Length: 260
Image 1: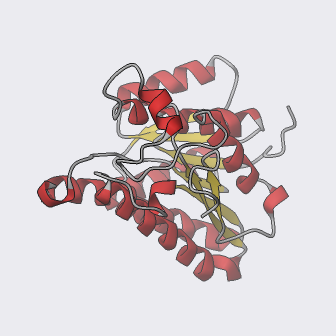
Image 2: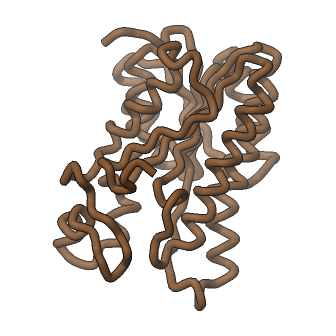
């Protein structure tokens, strides 16, 4: 596989999750050194151990993206150990579903804290280091739920909509420094997060078919995305193949939102 990212250093938050792992693997396979960041210390340690056996350059860092002190410490550690930061992929996210009229403030605050404030804090800290380099690529993994309403997903959708616009604002303000900021918005992807919403063994087929009762369209390509499908879009935006693309949102949902 071509090492189009050889010599680059990438931070991936939410690195221990399904999409995060796929992103780490895809960037690493193309030559990037990886800083795998996750709040789950055991999971990220296992990931580093596995990747290290393949002679890849990867370090694991436990950090809560909602904590400014931990975020700044993480960024300093990456620069200290790997020398620079060329790529940031904001993958860290949580999902808590429920009817909007009975949804708790605690759940609302938690979802916004990780999915939106986390993107703000990490992008701000990393963007500040990229300014001095006058180059860099920031990619936020959002969701197609940030573009169309979803039943029982008000907080998640709002958090992703906010992170989409936030990333575009970063892109506008950082463009004079050669820093590109883009979004990848997955649809239904076969991860533990998606499976947590299934109530029976027919979860996958129901997701693909859609639901009129829930105002949810099906997936025209008739299949769930795999984490590697999302990672492929991230690799493109991280590489020089997308050198003239910024403030763009690539929707990876098999047509579920009809190109919205």
